[in-house]
Image (cartoon, rainbow, N blue to C red; front, side, top):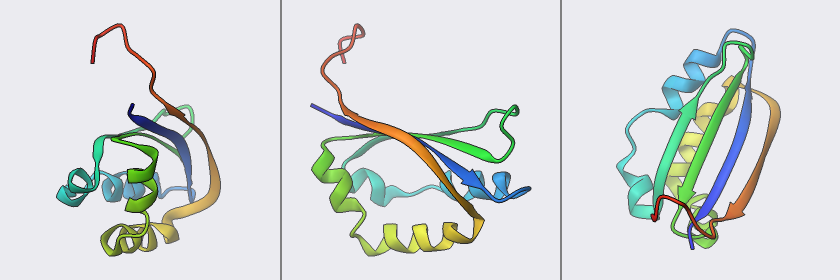
Length: 100
């Protein structure tokens, strides 16, 4: 089963686009760590919020990725853009009508 981590990141006022640019930089290491999908989105009705949906090979792969130096460095670089407001949910995928 795959694992999904979906959430919101609060950006400091006026810094959303910088956060989006950071989160969407090409990162070949994520695939090597087991990340199958990493989508970043915005909603102009929430100008200081960034939405992220991650799909991983497993919850363990996601947890392990957070210990990697490249991932820790990326988080540290993003931290000054964040307001500290976070939301979201996680789940194990049990099926799909798409057959994938």
